[in-house]
Image (cartoon, rainbow, N blue to C red; front, side, top):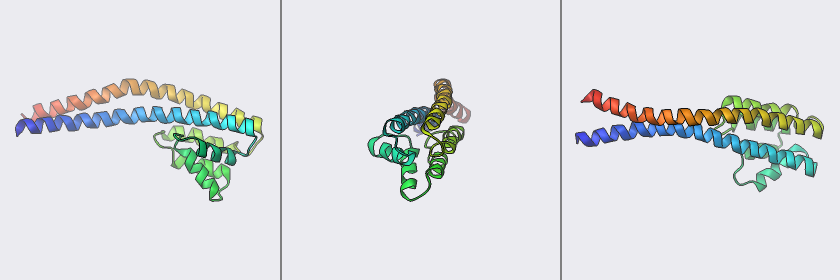
Amino acid sequence: MKIGGMVLVIACTTSIGISFARALTERVRELERTLAALSSLGTELSYSLAPPAEAVAKLDERETESAAFIPACASLCRRGKPFPQAWREAALMFHGALSQEDAEILAGLSDTLGQCGLEGELSSLEHTRTLLSMQLDTARARSATHGRLYRTLGLLTGAFVIIFFI
């Protein structure tokens, strides 16, 4: 009975550490999906010359594993919300595993997408991609170092609790 409790304590604390590490990894994946979506959006805008709302709708239809905010933005546009407002709202409210800072960078695109010419939109997309690429590099480094730390701390915390109660 006692050994079963010890195993359960270690399993619980280790799983908590693993879930924290997984959150870091999920942010990295979401940033990668976001960068891919922004690249696809830039390509769609430059080749089809469609308005941003139509380009996002096409991305939503075409992409199966897109960034979390793309379907939300397309849905808001279909409901009649103006594109810049829909983009900002989708980026801030449906950002998935992105941090609030990442979402703010993404939401900043609402100032130019649909508001200026194609060159301005593409330039703004490239600037946002650069900023998010820097965020991705930081997130990867943090995931590598802190992820290992969280998993190890989970295991060691369980061991400490067991030793404390023995």
